[in-house]
Image 1: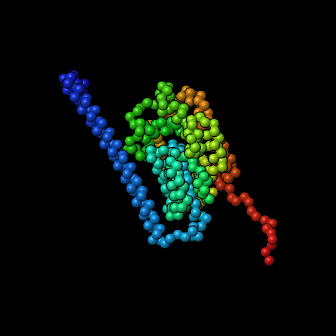
Image 2: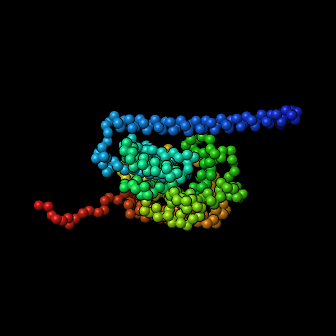
Image 3: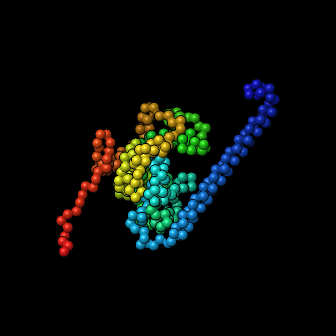
Length: 357
């Protein structure tokens, strides 16, 4: 190529460069059109699948309110935080849905925007609460917490989630945007072609690894208020803690995912019966999604990020969530020979009056 460049006249070299640039622009434009077409196709397929399910339920006969008993009238929302093993956990739900007889639905927001418009919030709440054909239902998607009580809903859905060490989550997301993962290796990623390591990014003060990028788990738990997305807001962190304790059924951590699954199976067997064995025998190998080309950051890089007030807040929230999870686990399981076992029922009723004749 170097010899060819020397032999070519300057004008031809310029034409070659221009032709190459035009060709690249054309290819990028075609790729964008293909991605848009794929997105439209996915939405069309999703609408078709929904119609099929509704038609199937119609053929089976209309479901009366009385027929939808307590065990069936359940909706779980997993508003998954990116890069917290969310795909790995969601695949467990997909594997069990046919056997345990519930529906799984992905909440696909435009450009993965975690904040819904007010009108979409109303539509979403109405769908979740009145869509009887999809109950029992397991909804998952990258959406921040939404308070159903604000919309006058009598029976709120069950919220669950998983969070991760904030720096580990950011490192994973950084490389995911550049190299993807082993789940869909052929998919073109937003930062594809950028070979810069996370360490180099931090050393150069890059925007993709800035401390502000750590601010994600707090707003996801805080919700749809504007202050939730104000980076470094103490109010947002306090609200996130409040919601975690009062509005979430269970919040696990990526580092202890198996224990999270075990507790869910014990508490919500309608959905998660068989989940622990499935994860132990199959899930650890087939479900775990690994980011490609990920390089662990150096101690210097970690120390630099830990100087940030944003990291201190996100880490405080993570430690708070971990403490809550470990407290729940300690009262639900016992350890024997290095393995955990769910405790049997530890209460009963007595002294029941008045006595029946």
